[in-house]
Length: 152
Image 1: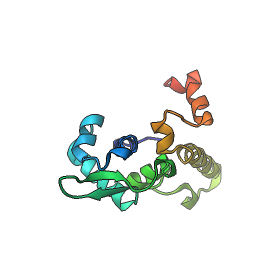
Image 2 (image 1 turned 90 degrees about the vertical axis):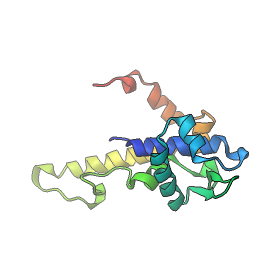
Image 3 (image 1 turned 90 degrees about the horizontal axis):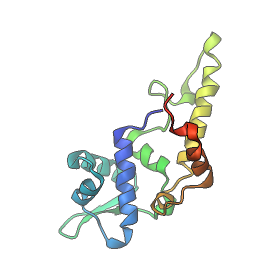
Image 4 (image 1 turned 180 degrees about the horizontal axis):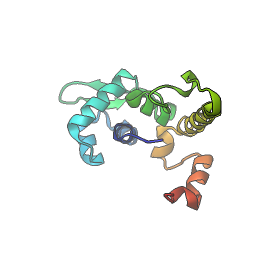
């Protein structure tokens, strides 16, 4: 699985909004500067997040972006889906839409299991969890495994 730059930037942008939620709307320029995200690219991402119902925007001098709902109700999966579509796809299709024949038949349950595990993690972590540096125990345990940090 590959996390796109778009998805990484989107998660970082909404996380910035989550930690500043009490400060009022945040300008895209401020998010771009703090998170080192190209401003024009961020504008497109924020548009996708707005259309996805995750952020709201206000125009004007006191305008900017804010979360459209509470940080504890927005998962990392929600953010990735808003900017990239399905979490796990094979050749651009959802695994459940695929069919294989012959010796390749066992691939389908493998891809479905992969999707289920990725979803389990990404749907189990909210912006509030990350903002509070309080990742759920199963996620912390997986990240604490030494092999998780190795590149085979």
